[in-house]
Amino acid sequence: MELKVGDKVNLIVVRNSGIGFSVLVNEEFEGLLYKSELYQKIEEGQKLIGYIKKIREDEKLDISLQPIGFKQTIVKNEIVVLNALKKNEGLLLLNDKSSPDDIKYQLGMSKKAFKKAIGGLFKQKLISLTEEGIKLIINT
Image (cartoon, rainbow, N blue to C red; front, side, top):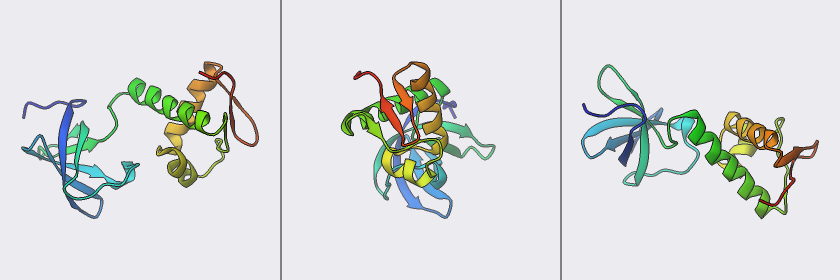
């Protein structure tokens, strides 16, 4: 197997299993997208771009739809939050006490990813955090 963790791959969704979706990776290998890591609707036959998260001993692949690596994901999530703020006149009624479901529904990311993204934006002085939610400080 010439693939390595972090590689960008082509996926075809094969079938829904109990813990996730079986996918065909680069039309050659078998992989799995875990349901707990999906933040979008997926259906059988759909073609997607994914990333190798782990190569298991049985040579099956664990796949992610997000790029592997802390920095790439953080920046992408910060952009998602900024775009949502722009669409909502500079205010998002979400904060670190919001439910994971509210965050997933509004932004399509996990609560952990959300908290890292708003932390990064706060450090860059692009947002302020209030009791009611997040406010955009500068219109970027």
